Amino acid sequence: MTRSLLAPMALAGAMALAGTAQAQRPEGVYLSAGLGASWLAQTNASVFPPDSARLATPSDLMNRKWDVGHAGTIALGYGLPFGLRAELEGFYRQNQNGTGSAFTRPASSGIASTYGLMANLLFDIPLGGLGQTVRPYLGAGFGYAWTDWSSVRGAAGSARLALDDTDGTFAFQGILGMAFPLPAIPGLALTAEYRYFGTTDNPMIGGRVSDAASGESRRVSVPVATSSHNAMIGLRYHFGQAAPAPAPASVAPAPARSFLVFFDWNRAELTARARQIIAEAAQARTTQPITRIEVNGHTDTSGPARYNQGLSERRAAAVAAELVRLGVPRHEIVTRGLGQTQPLVPTPDNTREPQNRRVEIILR
Image (cartoon, rainbow, N blue to C red; front, side, top):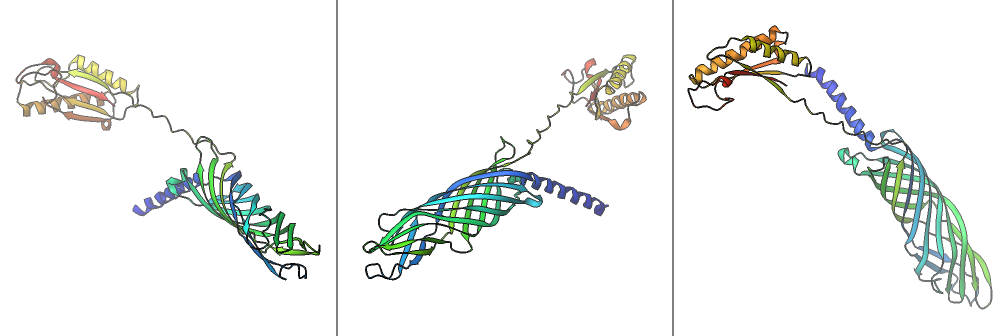
């Protein structure tokens, strides 16, 4: 018996958990976008100027540090079963030239931009009940990126460096984020992310190094760094997400209805009027939903408490028997004898009070 119950219970539990996880990790098409800050790694590279005594040494180290820049992403994705998401992302990052050592004079100048396309695979981590307010996720991406250096200028001694070029390489990224669903708009969530971005090879940025005095020059190619740390804030919208079903309106239970059956003093037999009232109670049972019928017997205070307890029980039994005779199933009826403990009209002991000699029928 126990084993036969455990299997359905386990299945029901698994289905409930699956439903909760599904609600936390919606499937289907979504669109996301984000903006944030980007910290681009500095570039350290050797630059070989023309072979001239008036130029810098044959190999000068170029060191470029970049100011904190900005980044933007937009992605079209699809939510898959088990919390997986696949998306195609376009991105753009830009940093202004900051400080450095060699080849940094005149004052720092230039812009480094990176843009491209990434294919990402992400996993939404279920958090049980917390998943309604926060949904962590992680992911990785692989794609292709173009690195563009524009108007990057510098000087070392009499050597002048000018870099203006674009090069493309394969790229990768890691993603760690949190989504915060916005209940006011089903399917919409606020996102906060950290992204690490890098390329499989250093792009080669071309330019010219020349001697200011002699005018000698030659082309150079400089391997530049592309790895960056990025902090993003954005929005993600899953299409076709219905609003949560409203909680079912609570149905107020039907008010209990009661009938009073009165008895002669020291008697438990039903009068004609008593049978009429009991018939009305039996009829009322058929016109409203009833879960049980309480039949409570009472007495006045004109006799000993023990005797009155028994008399109240006999009165309740007489009413219950009449209800059964009128077609009420016996299992719906609960009888109690309350003796003289709950008088309808408070009286002193040893008082005959007709209204206290009663049975109350309560339909619940």
